[in-house]
Image (cartoon, rainbow, N blue to C red; front, side):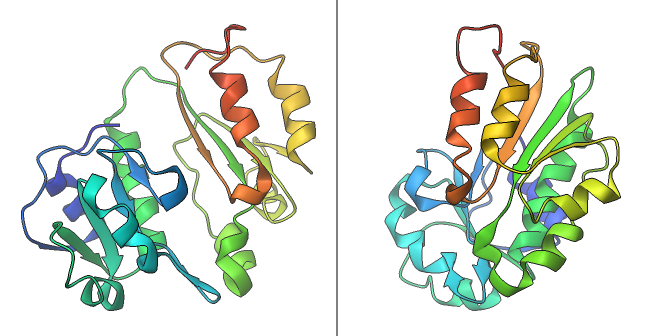
Length: 202
């Protein structure tokens, strides 16, 4: 992924506070798996607030993306910040603009249940938009509704079932693969499969 800060601001209809980054190469929503040089995007749910974890990655983040309340709580952080109306929507907006920039690329989404969304999980999962994705593999009970909305996708009840099928599929070296779910879905095993030497290079 490579987008300019201006492209991200336009896509999300957000307001920049501070220096607009020239280039963004990754967006992360989980402080525990944050990599230096990424953007930290804070999700908010009924029982959690990702904004509270921004300080733990601020020294490694290109910029921070949060909602109005969250950005106000970051006054002690020197990073540039993008203020958006809704960070979950912004996450989708960024993915959409990135997808539109890809040409001659097969875009594959491997999505699992996102339990951190709490009580709003069912509506959020059903409202996901995967138009523009060439192939979609959906995992978990909450993703079943999305699979019904997109019958060309492939749905699995659990990660083990998904792995049993994905192991027989060859992904091309030029494919772009998005893997996203709650940590409870253990999709790191899917990432390990994709990065293995068994013709699953991405």
